[in-house]
Image 1 (cartoon, rainbow, N blue to C red):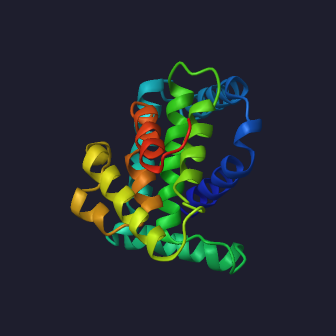
Image 2 (image 1 turned 120 degrees about the vertical axis):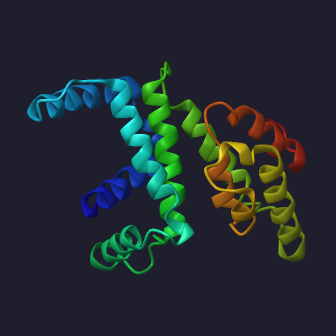
Length: 199
């Protein structure tokens, strides 16, 4: 699991800083080629559906780490942060949960018939809207609360977390918990309409 935490961090940083430069088709070819080699080395059948299910299961575990129930995983995260990261880098369980959700979205693009990562780019653009940099103080706090409520009321069914649990999370955590390839366009419209922005 410690190696998985390191891999998650590396992929997360790659996505955060270079998502617009990543070529899905190249990544897909290399990923599937590597997966076939791994299956052959372990003498197990190459089954994309099983691989996808296993990845999503692992990402689900990581995406729920800020719930406080997985002490083992939380320890690996804290150990990794203490050993390898600058103290100024945010790598809390909440950050890790968001990273897992972002990587899950990327994997959905890989395993479905997408030709690029534009859907992931769009997700990061919506995240930028949710920073609410045009607001300050009390007004910003009210906008955060209202947007969080909108996301929970409309899209909580897409999350693995119960709506009551989501109520205790920050706006960014709620957003990454509910977004997926099926609702991203609708969420974008909800956010843009609420903020009165032009698409």
